[in-house]
Length: 335
Ligand code: SF4
Image (tube, rainbow, N blue to C red; front, side, top):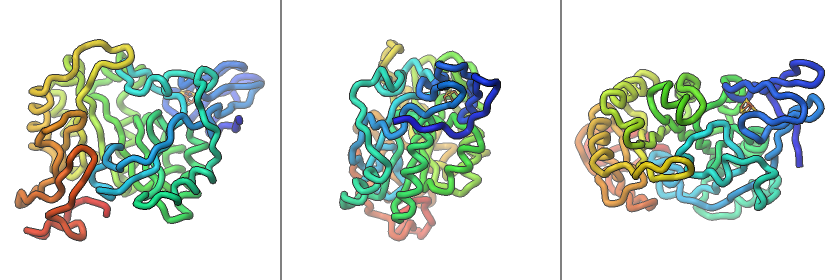
């Protein structure tokens, strides 16, 4: 099932330019863009992954990760195929670094069926667009999101943030929460490790925050590549500049994957960066690591324990109506 893509222009009779993400690929007839899932056929750009689902699961919302958005609820999580980044450490390369024709197990599921699936489950808040980069299945995601909004359910986007301003601004009104992956604070890292660039990701974070949407960030810490404490502090200052001290940050522990073979991030590195981040931001968490102090939510004013988390289970114990039970501070949690 093919769908004509949005956000492209004709460059000549046969060639097109895709304007969905900052790569702005020039694509000759018969070829695909960097993401491998938008293909020019005789001067028309198609979204090859329209209605093609690689994974669909009911997950705890904490798994996205979102810790301040309906804690304790589930969300129907949907993935497709392809990605516009080429991360050497990709955790989902079997669905993200291939074209649609290379993926054998896609299910064809129309938007209305995803919506009815979302309505079926109790304790489900809506649909999350995740697993692979949702920007590269924009048309499919958008159609589902419009329908989900009409049903008064929630839409969540988990993304690398590498998308152009116009498609993002068209999508934002339908999306309730974002988790954006900020991979590092140097352009060199983005260029060498992901074949993309940093600035558009910062622009995306700014655009989402300015639109007043719920926003959490994830930073995967890779030893020797993005664990320099001084550069990490620059990243934290930039986050404060863009979206403030209440921005929720998830520090995620790297494990070897795909083309990256270096050892997993040491426990001490994670804890050191966690304690640095706590001095800058009010809500910092650690992912991919068990038994750490970085799972729970504490009141930044009085220190009261507000939410206990055990893996993906949340228990709200010191918070009522998004306020600390002890000192009444408003906590940025959507509930
Ligand atoms: S979405 Fe794909 S085809 Fe379009 S500009 Fe980005 S990488 Fe290129």
